[in-house]
Image (tube, rainbow, N blue to C red; front, top):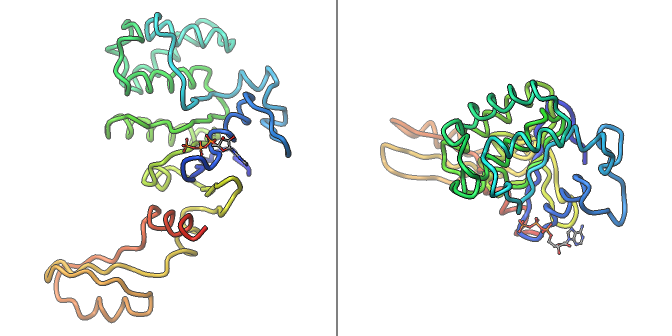
Length: 250
Ligand SMILES: Nc1ncnc2c1ncn2[C@@H]1O[C@H](COP(=O)(O)OP(=O)(O)OP(=O)(O)O)[C@@H](O)[C@H]1O
C-alpha cells in the first residue's frame, strides 16, 4: 500500500478487518510481524517522523483537565512547533473547525462531537506532512463532517498525504483518490472510478413521471430511457452497493 503527496487514501473493511491494527503500525504503536512500513523514508518510530505526522486514533481523549486552547498548545510544543507559529496555527484551526467559541472551555465539558474536532485539531497543530485518521468523523453532525471534509480536501490540495479509515462510504467516495478494501489482506484497490467501472453490472433507471424504477444491464439503459416521456434519472450502484458486493462474496 502506498500514500503519495496530494492524495487521500481510504481503507474500507468490515469490523475486525484489521484497519485499526494497520494504522497502529503506521503510527508506531505496534510492530508488524512481517513486511515493512516507511514514512518519509524512515521507520514509523523515528522521532523525526513523529514530528511530521498527525494522528487521530480511534479511542483517544483530549487532556480532560485542560482547556481547548491548552490542549492544542501543549501538543504543539511537544511536537516542537515554535511559539509564534503555534499561536497562529491554533487560531487558524479553531476558526476552520468552528471551535472558537469553546476555546477556553475545559475539554471534559465538551460534547462528543466537539471533542472529536478538538482531537483532529490536535493532530493538525504541527501542520503534518502525513495525516493518519481512524474514523475521523464518527459522531459528528452533518455540518461538522462537511467542515472536516473541506479541511482535508484543502490539505490534500496543499501537497499533504492523508490516510483514513471510515465506515461512511459517502465520505470515502467524496474524499478518496484511492480506496483499499481490506479484510486481513487487501481484497481490492483502485480509484473510485476504477472500482465503479469494475463492479457496475447494473444501472437503476428511475421514471419519475410514472413512479417506476428499472434495474437493468448497460445494454438496456438506452431503450428504457428512450421510452420514458418526462423526468428520469439513471443511477450507477453506490460505493455502498459495491462494498456489500465485495465483502458478501468473500
Ligand atoms: N493482518 C491480520 N491478520 C490477522 N489478524 C489480524 C490482522 N490485522 C488485525 N488482526 C486482528 O483482528 C482483530 C481486529 O482488528 P482491528 O481492531 O484492527 O479491526 P478494525 O478493522 O479496525 O475493526 P473496527 O471496524 O471494528 O474498528 C484484532 O484482534 C487484530 O489483532
